[in-house]
Image (cartoon, rainbow, N blue to C red; front, side):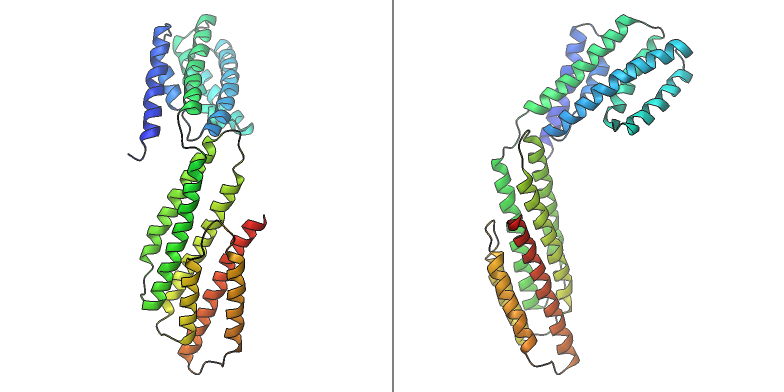
Length: 313
């Protein structure tokens, strides 16, 4: 099951927070489960940042709501004033992540209908049980390690290679379709999502390299998509077409983590110079065909420059 880990997290923290609150006698123990459920985040680093913001806004909310309820009364007018001030403040101080948990907690202060330090203390305890369980579960729940990043890096390489081979075969057979491109694009998106998940789970580590690598491959894929669309216009076979096909075949065998791009850039520059020195096309069709081939080679050149720029940085 694709979402098995988020499902497990949500179920366990909700039940655990509810049951612990019930055992220690929290009046609204069910709210603890709700707070824990909405506190589960996608990554460990995000859960730490969010927990801090929620705690800050929670204390502001308890103080503000208690003051409003005492001054205006335990009624909807005071509650609406609180909501307005809370939402404005959360956006003003970039604490939006804490808005919903704070509203859930303050709602119970309104329901009791009177000022009670005991109930306020109980609400604070309930909040920390929920947030604490969710935070601990987010941090210590087993996740993919840094070793998984190498797997995803190679997956990106494999997808780029497959796309180049697909374009090469498409030009060779003159098939006017880029259907397979959409399948590869979905694979790229899934891999990028997994990389973001893993890097977010590896707290206190710098994974800028894999993030830069994934962005570079994503940009390369966009170039290949454009090349695939342009290749739809190639409906004849000229000597230059065979040169491009041969180059794409060679390029597909030089995709990887190492810097293969520098040598391939030198090769493509030589080919482009050769294109310029050839006799001008005789027919309009040949002229358009060679123009598209030249454009494709220029796009591949940009693809290689992206890889070289990654290595240089």
